Image (spheres, one colour):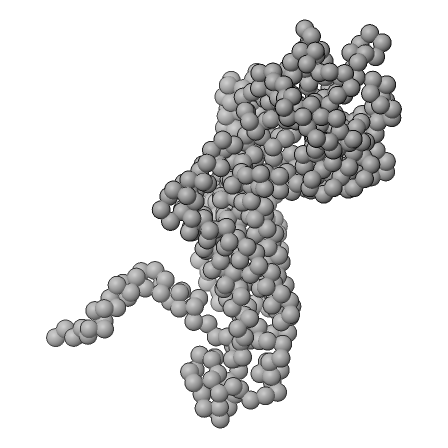
Length: 312
Length: 262
């Protein structure tokens, strides 16, 4: 039996009758688990049956043999003597085992315990609902940017597209897309995200966009530009045309999007982060890493500060 | 013969009725009419001013919530509607917008007063800690509220703010992703910020203010650091406010209750 409050002061619960048996409580818990299991899964039913049988056995054994604590309450003599002086310590009582677990302690503990269980049952799902959706099902759908013939070789297009049709305008993203011609037999594209690697502001091409030559494909707009690089209006980060950082506060190069070509259409998918890029155009060697938040180092000793990335 | 009821008793009957059944009147008197050091300073009203600023934010915020519609397509139009169309909307929104700055400034001024008066010392350390938590929650109110107009300034300021959180070592990326409710700012971000701004944080701030005030009442108000009275080296000012009314200045000094300060 659990011993709670075994060091109670001696004024507590002396001549009470023994507390009720705890085994029926366990038995009831087992039945509840079993019933919950019928709704949830058979494994929980098995656990519930085990708990039920276990406590039923203990309960039966106690009923048959009689509890050590059970029986008539001891006859209590009314106090006759004058109260003893407080200074005289009372001798420790070792004869009454049930003193060690009086009923009121059981009631206190079970009230607090049940309160905690109920509070937990209410709070945990709510907390999960608050935190979980931010981290689960974060997959990225492919976005169709239109036929690759829309992308003239060697020219950047400021391409704005809706990355999630359900979410609408709030999911509009901008990428700088350049057709690099062919690498062997495979078409090559550079798809640079406009999220500054400093703190996420939208970087702009350092060049005059040719608005009059804007192309459209469904809700995708493509504005041609011949930039000397990219710059961020917020805090002055500067990048070259491959997205490498060349000046200012950013800690790494610009992110890129993975792309694929399906039925002659350019599709962009998951973004990923870049430590740096060596070379240019189709021959560029991209040192890519998992997608990281702006401002996070992805290479060098500082990247040890970000050992775990949330699921993107 | 029944006792004759005076007019005053008739007028005060509701108060007496309430007091007899609740003790509220006595509680309010205990809360409002406390002994303070005789030489308290005007700077010691900054805490009450901060509380007033919070109450202004709370009351204007509740009414703004009746017209504001969080959501990526509705937030900005509803703000325009509040400002331009609804009667009095420009005023209440202005009170909330500018009151936010007033609240933050007053928190810092109050904090400076407490620091310079040494009022954070024993036995008031816990109240300093609660105050710092209140400051952090107040700044979080400013951060979450800034997104709600959903214009270019607020969107990009929030982007930068979230990504700043993301640069914190180890847990930073998780905090950032929790704040925006996904990998990017999305359709849920604004309602998330709205719920944090008008439910979660105000409730926490209200609870901490209650604790803050409880400790102020329990521990009393400090004397200014230059107080001769607290140092026991000077005469009382002619109008001692230790609850005994105006004194002539020649009476023996009364110990000022709850004025033991560092």
